[in-house]
Image (cartoon, rainbow, N blue to C red; front, top):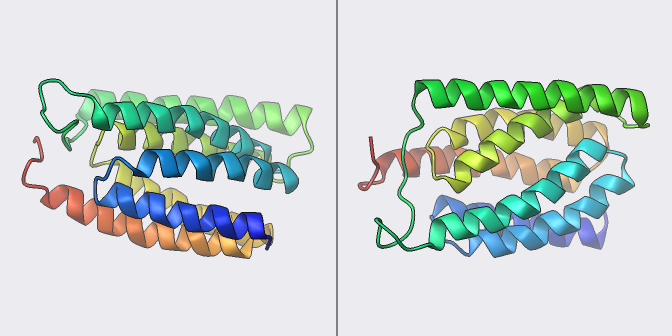
Length: 187
């Protein structure tokens, strides 16, 4: 565990807690966290996770814009459910990204866990986009992914990051409950 990992983990807890509370400050704090994790994952050869953090940086900006823009909804975007076709298409896109990235990492890098890391990356992108769009389904997907991430990070001896993702799992459970109970939820 390094001081950098400790600082990034602390920012991660703050960012996810703010997300659960639907506070738009989750996005700039999350942006700093993912920039730090780019270096951390490079250092332990989790290249797909490193690339994921780079994409997350862009998605942090997208989420901040989605949550703070003015329009039909006075206070930014409302929590909604994603419907059948869009849900299936998003998950299929996650699977395709996982396969392509896994093949690339397995054949062209010395990645530690190319296929698992790629699958977690592909589906994390789906969950992150859903979160930026305030889709309730982001939370159960995050729960599944975070549990698997905990195992991967334990395997890579990133114990603090594993603990962070265990906490993310608990926060995702809370987020799922809170967002489903939101009185403004568009059904």
